[in-house]
Length: 352
Image (tube, rainbow, N blue to C red):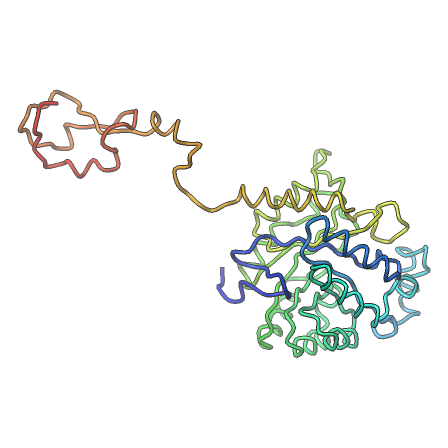
């Protein structure tokens, strides 16, 4: 893997080579426009063991054409008329985001946010945020990416709905800017339902192609997905696969109540599920440890399974040893077979 930009800071937390896989709860708009609920989401994430919490800063008139959104997103957001209507009803205002960021500092969890327009990025910059999360819809928005990169805030960039060519264009812009960044493999389906839709191999391929930390922005539901035979594959198994592919972080939508009438609630984690996920990831990291040694649990087997040097015939005292006089057999209580060459050409002091 390319060795550049392997670790980046998102404020009080870092991601990348040698760091634990960071779990990023995505509060999104599950606060339904309530600052009090947003604070409760942050507190609940902290209590579940998270060290970071992500929200979204929307300025509808800056990021969307209302009529166009009514024509293209009404079926997916029918309860609100369109995505524009949903955002209008559920957003937090910029001053509320500032209060939320201060609250996160107070309770000891890193505030993280997605700006969906250049104006939103400027507001977050002026608030003093540590980093930006860039959504999949903005990955190839070059005017936005170029200007956001000039703000010198580390960026995590999602790559849903993007081709390798489009991701490469964004990577080129980021590398030329000198701003540190990470990529997030993302499938922009809400939620995906089949293992064949997850494409987790992209994580390793991105790391190899671009030489930056890569994580997973995951929309699989807590109930899991189905493989081609119809067998249910748990969410935890999906995450284990991502970690095995080298994921530096995993982002999951997070809610106080999975039964709430939110756009994201059906694939969001509640506090209990988030706590379980964090514990699962820590366990997975233990299983994926890279150390290779004779481990304590292997020693009872080592003593009989390894091999020692043994004579193939009786050897008199004073004979010079050669390769034809020895072989290797179990157990491993004598001269290690890997060291046989050390005795070749030596004379025996006694008969064997």
